[in-house]
Length: 173
Figure 1 (tube, rainbow, N blue to C red):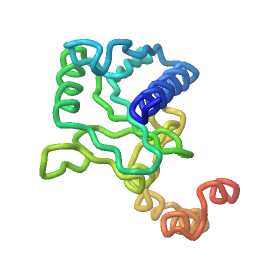
Figure 2 (cartoon, rainbow, N blue to C red):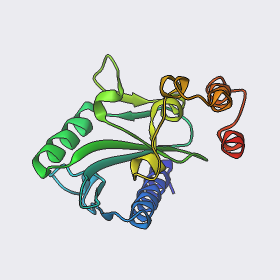
Figure 3 (cartoon, one colour):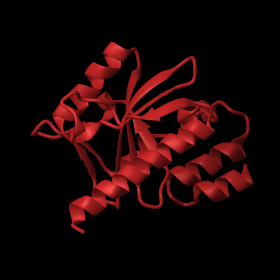
């Protein structure tokens, strides 16, 4: 089996994993079986909606290297999402990490017109799965700075600065 076939199977498995997670979170969801090179029409990998919000999602995964999307992939996603009435999102997953979501406009654009997501950016700036499906809401340090709970702010700063893991912070909070 070639590396490309193996990578495609892994990508398919990751897409199915995302579909199942969205389904478990209460979304009506489907994986576009003709996404990629199987059709002349450019379709997103996943369509999902919960009655209030609808998403057209391009899903990408990587062992740890940066994830690249061509300008054509992103343009096709934006075109489809606009015509379908959905929000365009790029979902990225790095090995041993959860899914993170981005609006295409929030991604780094290379000089060649491609889009790139590094693992560090996904972890620091991406919308994690619980926030994406509405289970949690991201709170910034500026918002917490007005909170009278000084310990909470200190814990969040420790996570930001890399002195405490998210799991340890959750235990403390």
